[in-house]
Structure formats: C-alpha cells, structure tokens
Image (cartoon, rainbow, N blue to C red):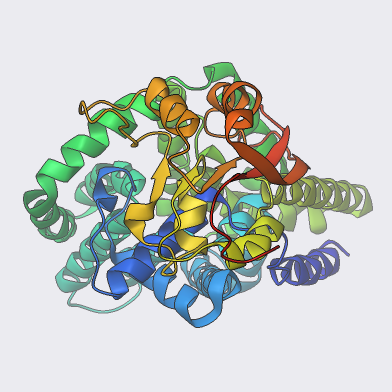
Length: 473
C-alpha cells in the first residue's frame, strides 16, 4: 500500500514538474539568461563579482534561452533535474537494496526543494547534478576492482566543477576529503588533489573578482539578513517530511550493504554543513535551494524507515501512508509558495516591446529583468538602475542622483516594482515622477513571502510626457 501510494505521488509530482509556465522570470533567471546570452554573443560582463558561480552554467542557461526563451531554459533545468534523480538512485543503490534505493530517490523527487531547483533556469540544479555525480564516482571504487586512485581523482575534479557551478558546495570538499582519508589515505589524497586542481587554477585566474564577490555579497548582502530562529524554523518546515520516516531507519539497518553500513552514517552527517552555514551567517537567502543537499543525505534514511513501516503491520503502514500524504501536500504548498514569490512581469514586457529601441533611455528598478527582456533591442548603455546611475558624475551613486535625473527628465521610460528599493520607488512615484512623466501601465501584484516580506506592490511604467512617439500600446 505504502509503495503504491509513493508511486502515485511521484507521478503527480512529475506532472507538476512539467508545468513550467507558472510565472514570469524570477530575478536570478533573468540575470543568468541575459549574461549567458551576452557571453555567447562575445560580450563581457562582471558576473564573477556578484554571481556565485563561474560563467560555465551561465553559458548553458544562455544557450537554452536562445533556443527557447524562458521556457527553453526551464526545460534544460528540468532535464538536469531528472538526470540528477537517476544518479541519486544509483548512489543509494550502492548502499542498500534497489527497491529501497528507488524509494529514497522517489522521496527526494517529491521534495519542494528539488522540484523548485529543477523548474527554475538557474545554476543550482546543474551544481547538484555534478555533486551527485561526484559522490557516485567516490563510491564506485568500493564496488569495482582496482584501480581505485584515478576514480577518486575524477570524483575530486567533478566536485571541483560542482563548486564552479555554485560556490556554496565548497564546504563539502574538506569534509568528504577527511572522511575518505580516514578510510583510505591514497584515495583521500587523490580526491583532494582533484578538487585542488580545479579550484586553485580558478582562484589564481579570478582572484580579484572573487575578492569583490566576498566583500560585497558574502560579507555584505548575504550576511545577517535573517534571524537564526527564522532559518531554523524554515529548515524544520522543509525537512520534516523526510525526518519523520528517517526516525525509524535504525529498525531497517539490516538492509544496508557492507558499503551502506560504513557510509550511510557519515553521509547522514553531511546533511548538516549548509544548514550550519546559514545559521552561523544569518543568511536566509537561497536557503530553500541549499536544503536540497541536506535532503539528499536524509532521504536514504527516510527510505529505510518507510520500508520498515510498510512491512511492520497495518497500523505502521497506515502511519507511513499518513506521513507520505501529509508530507506531499506540504511540499506542493511549498512549491506554489516558491513559484509565486516574485511578481509576474510578463504582461508589462509584452506591452512595452513596441516602445523600446536602441535609442530609448530607461531607468529600471529591476535592471536584471529589463536587460534580458529587451536584449539585444535595448543597448546596455541605455539602461540604468538604482545602484549604478551617477547623475552628477562624482563617482558615487546616491539616491539623490536618481531623484535629480528623473526630475530633469533624463529617461524616456521609468519602470518601478517596489522590490529592490521600496522607499525610493515610493518617493519617485509620489513626489518626483508626476513632474514630467505619466503612468502608462499600473498593475497591482501580490506574492508569497518566501523571498521577501514585501508581498504587495505595483508594476508601474512611466513615459516622459514630451517623448517622441516610437509606437503605441
């Protein structure tokens, strides 16, 4: 009964994964698609100073976006998500019987976190795919004959590539290296050498940009932005559907293979590092995406627990079924919350395409969205944003620079949504824009609170009153 229920829920989850037109692009999707397309066209962009990856995944996202727009980029992520689940199954199958491994992969497939990163055109799912591939290579020598060393080296290099696809997984490199070293020194050294080969070269080439990234992002925006208690609560809400059945895992430990008996426990400890990072730094940004790594290591224990409950009598099986259904319902609510955590700008973009050409000057509160939506129609020098426009050319961008420029009518169009700087957006709408601009689009929006406490607002496009006509809505 429990296994049949899990199969049905997985089918429903697969259908949910294919619903890719749920919202317009989130801010990261717009940014990465634009940068990727620009790089593919031979342009340059200072992405390594604020994007937590190398340019490698951006090329993939940009290529997919060139082929099929936002939907094309999301399809690529979905395919990577499916591939990662196949690798998760092979990973678990090295530690436990195939039916139990299949349950573990199915449980991970049901999580809102995996569905989330598999439906969004960001680098997260590509990093996860490489990370799981590295773990597969790591355990492969334990089930195959000699030689072992080169596979450990390959596993280290694959993990190094995963770091380049998203820097945050670098926390796993020393932990896995130490665990491996305790089992087999030669393999531990080979694994560490593989990671070092990738990362040392990357650090050497990009050291200056990475220092800017650290100072402005890691030590700036991504530090102390959320109370640790809130982070702990959100973590608990995401992990409980797996943690409950995992509590019964010890009763099914006899199902573990010799490899599983030695590796499941330390691998389960690897659920902790990224949670610890978020708690220690007070960083709530991207927490939902990072919890997929904790779930990766808890899911095999949850599979063991469910297997025990499914075979321990009707009362236990009923408990397992209730946990599954409750967890699935909760995960689907979480997916909806994540999907609707950003305003849908698509209708605005569709209406403004006739107003924008290479001569249009635009001030946008959301520059990432506009760069991608209007590329290459709008020249990059024609688009300004709140964080970089220097009206008085004194080398410093201030709020007054934006206010003065709008007051002087220096832009043909001004686009506001109140998400990046709600205070400045309010002041522009109510005190500055009425002087020279008229609102040609005003659409109210409401979002979930998963990315911001600011859940309501207005998508507003303003046009300069005496701007030469270049089209009509």
